[in-house]
Length: 211
Ligand code: SF4
Image 1 (cartoon, rainbow, N blue to C red):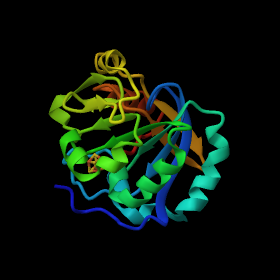
Image 2 (tube, rainbow, N blue to C red):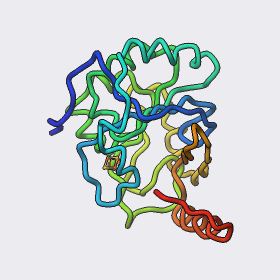
Image 3 (cartoon, rainbow, N blue to C red):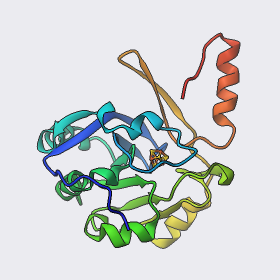
């Protein structure tokens, strides 16, 4: 049972937004990284985002107003983190405002059964859900999934089952590096070994990748 989550719908803690194509969901998407995660996956690759205060506190309605113009030029919106469901009340509010005008995708470290039991109302607003903890021993080359245990589903049933099956059987869409305000952001779920290979290439050029 999920008990550790925020009930403040009026505020949303945001770490970063960006745009990428196919890397974190189908088509061109606005990617929203929320901060805060109560889970402690041993192999977490987003440790800094476990801290809610790494993000900036927005009024939820201001955040919706800020991203609304962008949504006209993308195919969908993806929520990652951190753990988007940690800010359950704000997530519910945002998704209720945006769905169904834009396709919604949410990543979560919780498994599907826990989310169905804990947040059935929020799931109604989600077209695509990538659920389950990242387990390093089960990592591989998977589309939008870091490890084999993670599951792609369509909680509101807007995505046909054959499409979900095809995505579950597809390889990683790779990663994309973006420079913004002097920081480098890596979007995407790399296939096993990709980050190590990148580390080596950067080392050759006397650069270092810090995750
Ligand atoms: S759910 Fe994601 S952000 Fe949270 S600890 Fe697990 S891997 Fe890290």
